[in-house]
Length: 98
Image (cartoon, rainbow, N blue to C red; front, side):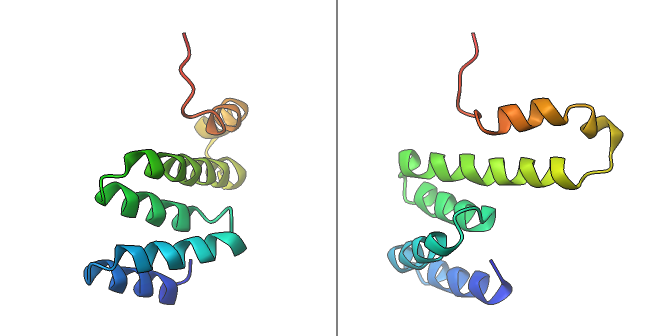
């Protein structure tokens, strides 16, 4: 998301226009399905409306995008040594391991 888009969504949310914000966010998501910011804003908007089940997949995708960016761009050796594990688990954040 660019700064203008963030300001647009923030304006909708400040005015209590959650449905307009979600409509615009879902529109942007069609063009940018891997935009972590869009997923995060969708998730937090659903979450603030008490719609956690709709929020969760978007939180999950936002975290996946963040972790992918981290492992692709880091120079930190402590992170690099866990690159494969981070890549594996980033796509399975909601899985319960027993």
